[in-house]
Length: 126
Image 1 (tube, helix red, strand yellow):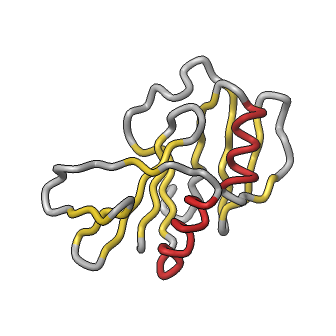
Image 2 (cartoon, helix red, strand yellow):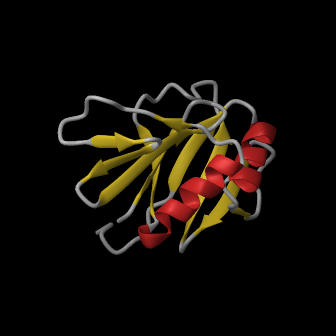
């Protein structure tokens, strides 16, 4: 039933203006039409990301959005670092090593960062 439909990531934030600056200026997402003064949409690849205000923003302790960026991984990590994005370090994960901000499982690379509300975002070489 849903297997042929696109899924849309939805991220709760407390301050929509700060979130807009982060998602547009730091991540480089293309802004789509706002659905209201409480909701912004962004184009990311062939899908969309919805950012909306909520009192529960930043309470999720797990990954919110994942981007499989393939061979552009290193370039994207460097670009985000140059824009002041700080990466998370998760040491002690079984089978995972870390080189600076990049986690590795064999040739597979992973990196995590947070938005201004603490929502966890993930990049990988998938």
